[in-house]
Length: 129
Image (tube, rainbow, N blue to C red; front, side):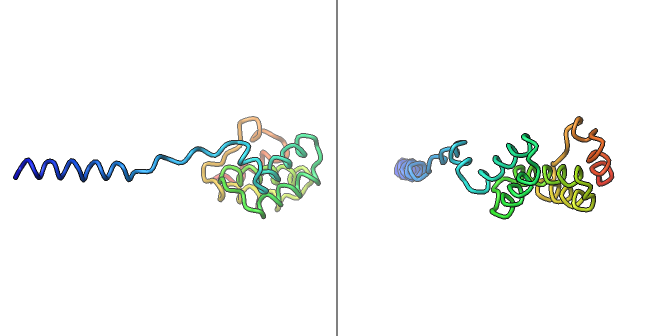
């Protein structure tokens, strides 16, 4: 009787392990880059790096409106918008963008060199909790 229970238990355990699904394959960079929001974010970063700030602003806003999947990506879009706003003397919009970055990703922080920037550094530091 005891042996029968052991065999039954082993059989049930074997069945349970057969039901376990393997983890899904990780999402590849090409898959992520093809999503509309992420594509707009990447294009916005390129435009920003090329000093095409009006175009970058539109692309970051589009990325956010389209729905970036990652909280870090949403924070990055807001951060770049804050930089654009601060450099064009739109301080209240800059503050709002930094707040939105922190709301998107509570771990959001500027790098040491970014926080030392003469235009947006003081705004960022003023908003620190």
